[in-house]
Image (cartoon, rainbow, N blue to C red; front, side, top):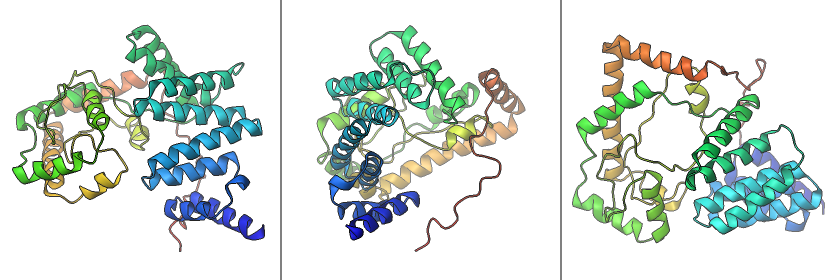
Length: 328
């Protein structure tokens, strides 16, 4: 039993250091019945970072059951919301809706908490997909407000910079790939599911075709359904006008954090796409330097978006970074 406890402690320490491979290995050596809900969720995270997506999903479902057994409604709600999102992304709406209803049950009687933000975000997404724009906007605004109160900053767009960058994308066109690039991408696609590929087109509002590598510039006003994620760019965008560019560097349909994505990281196609989008970014930066009105309009756009709710960093002023995270 002592050895089991020591292994759990080692797994938790690895999670705290974001050493996901070590955390996964330690959790695998532990008797599963001795893991708490938070341990199982950390186990699920470590499996996810190791591209063990099916195992991660199963572990997160076990974590949810453990939270329910422990009587931790808030943790169960957050876990159920996470599972709902994962199943919707996997195009399993019935299961996703089931976990959404569980999230709602755990949140009954709650007035203000982070978990209510997750629930509002789910309702906003469903409102958008079902054509209920009013509900989508109202719930999205609520999710943003809760996120700002609890230090979870959403990405702030910037119309002047986005419009200017898109002009450069249109001027340069898509990256130029050759037959070898396409042939390798087709081999990667052969390992994917049909739904993986269809989902990639839906996310950018594009009609599906037979292209293995993206050979088009998606219109700026295309009805996107992007996959959500987390990034520190969200915090930056509240302070400085920010714009991001997306460009083809891997086969259409490639899931994030997968072996297929890793396998394409150093391919000629990946380099071509990276250099191409770097040109777009550089052209946008040069124009921003040359055209002072662009900077002024970008700053004005940011000020308008953040006027009612200015950014407040969730990191305490006296916080110190853990510099020993990579220690052996």
